[in-house]
Image: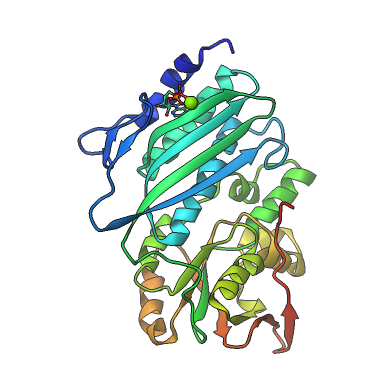
Amino acid sequence: MSLSEFALIERFFAPLGLVSSNHNRGVALSIGDDCALLETPVGQQLAVSIDTLVENSHFLPNTAATTVASRAFGACLSDLAAMGAEPAWMTLALTLPETDEAWLTDFASQLAELAALYRVILVGGDTTKGPVLTVTIQVHGWVPKGQALRRDQAKAGDHVFVTGTLGDSAAGLDQLQTTGNVNALVQRFNQPCPRISSGLLLRDWASAAIDISDGLLADLGHILERSQLGAEIELTRLPLSEVLTANYPLKQAQQWALAGGEDFELCFTVPAEKITAFKQVAAEHPVPITRIGQLTKNPGLYLIKGDGSRQQTTARGFQHF
Ligand code: ADP
Ligand code: MG
């Protein structure tokens, strides 16, 4: 490496670890020692999640460094959102084939921008040379003890909701692979928007939540499995963006909404007795919230079509192996 490992950390990543009196997030010791020293606020639990992006597996060679940073950070933060946790810290493991200063500049500045936006301090990491560009981010968030949104607490009769719109990211990937043009759909794929504020709101309302990384059916399937329930999803209620339906046939759009990955929206359940009050709160929330179905005591995942017919479906989604 032309730039020494320590010079690289100092120049590109140490700035993301700086704390100030009004932004210390409980960091007693940041980047530069063998470990960081961190304090979790009294009464809060630590929510921890890690995600890895590997060149060729998760992104194409020559993907912009800013996109790699956005996708790595967004995927990770989305897990905190799904638990109802407030982001606080992250660590970063980078494996680089070479020290490309332009790439590092773009990557670090995008990460810094997002970290500032979500109030996350970079408290450490590891930097290595290796054959394939690999980015691993671990995030740590806080959630009041007992208030985390788990997958296993849903009940029959709970209503199923999602945030935002579904299918855009899969359509964005399709656009990248076919036209190569960057448009609003590609933006959704390149720059996932973790629904942290929605997760914080849902602490008071949801019985269970998950983020949609592998596709709605697959991820809702995890809630069903862990809570031992079934669900009925109304096809016509799936929230589809205008840009998606303007560019693709409805069937394709619905297919992506059900099984396309990486939307990083939240899918969550709300007990029936809370629905009236929740609808009012949801209407004022800055992120659209749509009711798409209901949980059933009988297992199985069913799609209800526009004509009222029911069709059993399987929870297909992206799987690595
Ligand atoms: P050690 O040898 O103890 O593992 P390193 O030499 O790997 O420490 O790292 C020195 C310091 O720089 C540590 O505090 C580590 O957490 C931090 N660090 C290393 N790589 C990164 C990175 N990519 N981003 C942020 N901090 C990093
Ligand atoms: Mg190390």
